[in-house]
Image 1 (spheres, rainbow, N blue to C red):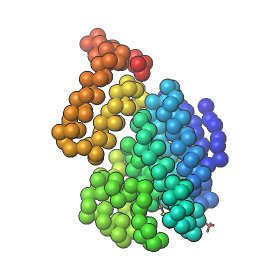
Image 2 (image 1 turned 180 degrees about the vertical axis):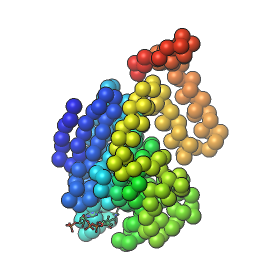
Image 3 (image 1 turned 90 degrees about the vertical axis):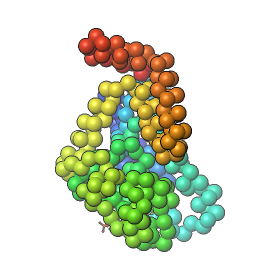
Image 4 (image 1 turned 30 degrees about the horizontal axis):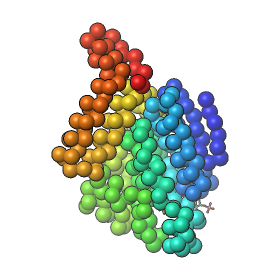
Length: 259
Ligand code: HXC
């Protein structure tokens, strides 16, 4: 099933929902309208019981070259705050189902931050990650200073953020930002292959596992362990827990229902 809104193309394939950024003339610059369409699409997939996993991608040439500079260039502080320019990113953070970023070409500024809002990043060998906001008089604003630092460590993050240096796909992989690097022709197929595999897993456990992993960035170790324990126990209220464990013991494939 394929549907088209102007700036985001959406498609569902089995239990995988795909959002494709579609503003090629400005390298998928993340305008307010594009972000609003993306968030609407992600929230619709999050609420769709038929979708278990999502993929966000761009084109082979570009994932996204950042927030739309033309949107922001003449803005005042009051306008930025009144339009709540950055708060909408919290709605991406709040998506509960796993999201895979399939990145080829540039993922810069808000584009890199969008990839870092996802849970797994599959990169084509041509991918370039960066936070070049410093070159246009500002700094990252949608989580780059926090998520990049957590992903690759302070000393590498500082060079990327303070000097606007791009990381190649291979560097990003070695630094821990990228899950896997594949040939340019393969990046989307590989992300879809992985998404379909993950979509075979029990959907409620997927959501809670994502939630628990993300808490690792927010909580102390003992708080995080406690949180994990509670989520683990809560899964024993699901039919899928019974089905998964019984199927193992009966040496058959589990048939999960998301219940
Ligand atoms: C608006 C953009 C854009 C952007 C590219 N374009 N990036 N428009 N916002 N972020 C437009 C160009 O103006 C140009 O339009 C067209 O896309 C093609 O871009 P070129 O520069 O001609 O392409 P190329 O020479 O291949 O260079 C690619 C590039 C460069 C290295 C990616 O475009 C670039 O440096 N872009 C800006 C990257 C950046 O600074 N990102 C951070 C943005 S701030 P015309 O009309 O001339 O064809 C940010 C803050 C995040 O993200 C805060 C939270 C969201």
